[in-house]
Picture 1 (cartoon, helix red, strand yellow):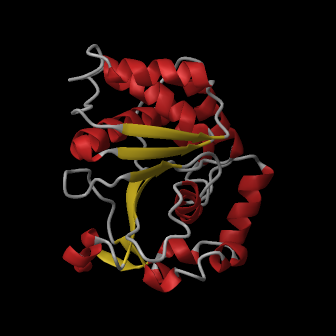
Picture 2: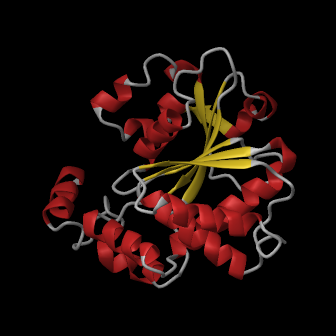
Picture 3: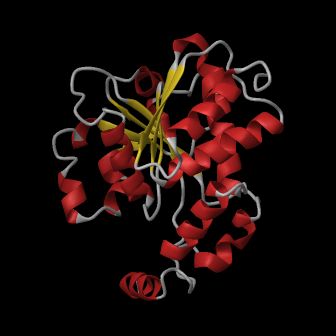
Length: 245
């Protein structure tokens, strides 16, 4: 049934609802109009050298035992071979606070399941090859609703609208940067995530203000549909007195 659902979803480009595309475009209509995405979650990936793991072992399970690892293709599973036994993932989605916020953060682009988003986040934050030091990564998981569903979402945020997922991403940035303060934070965005970030930060500035808390933060973009100059304007606005709480 899972394979059949995937085939139907792919053949229909995500128009027809299946379990694999979380209802496809039909389920995504409220999100496109600004309602929060209930399928979005914050996942925290750490290794056995992380203080967050050492202090709260009961909050994590081995990544290899998680549904996210099991959802990966054989080829993607093989990429975890070197550090699979030392990686852990939060049992439940996390809420951002001073105790949970991490330096490294990632938002995925289109057509990723959560397992693929975790893999990409580890790669694109440079955490992939860490062996001797702590790995601490928070993934702001952007759910996939099939090709057309994801494309519609990206288009809304790219051309001036604000989807529910963009609002959640704007809140995520503000929460992490505010919680980390002068300890700093880094955000890696892949593809559609850059449109979510650009739209979400603008929305957050206009709805409660962006919490910088004297923090130093960096944003790294991969395959961005948002031009560098436009993103710089948004980041500068977030860092200005107008954007700050």
